[in-house]
Image (tube, rainbow, N blue to C red):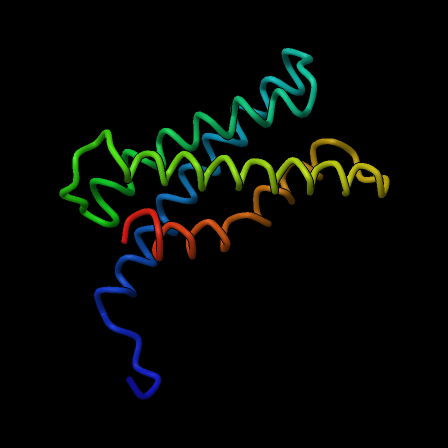
Amino acid sequence: MGGHFPKEELKKLIKFGVTGCANTLIDLVISTLLLQVAGVGVYLAKGVGYCAGMLNSYLVNRSWTFQSKQRAVGPQLIRFVVTNGLMLGVSMLLIGGLTRLGLPDFPAMVLSTGGTLVLNFIVSRLWVFK
C-alpha cells in the first residue's frame, strides 16, 4: 500500500463521519431535552438519546455508508446492536468518571459522546459492516 489510503475507504470514512454527526446530533438533542427540559436523570437521558442515534446510525450506515446487501435483520444487526451496546457502556463509564471528577452532567455527556466516536467507526468498519 505504501501509505496510500484507498479512495473507496476514504469515501466510507467521510460518509461514516457525516452519518456520525447526524447520529450525534440526534443523540445530543434528545438527551439534552430529556435532561434539561424533562428533568430525566443523566443516565436515562443518555440511554434514550443514544438509542435514537443508534437507530439512525444503523439505517443510514447500512444503506448509504457501507451499502450492505445483507438482510436488514440478521447477523449484521446483531453485531451492530452488540457493538453499540458496548459503546453505550463505555459512554456511561465515561460519564460516571467525568462526573466523579466534578464535571457537570451536560459536559460529561457531550464528552462521552465524542469519546466513543472513533472506537465505534473502527469496530463498525472491521466487524459490523465488513
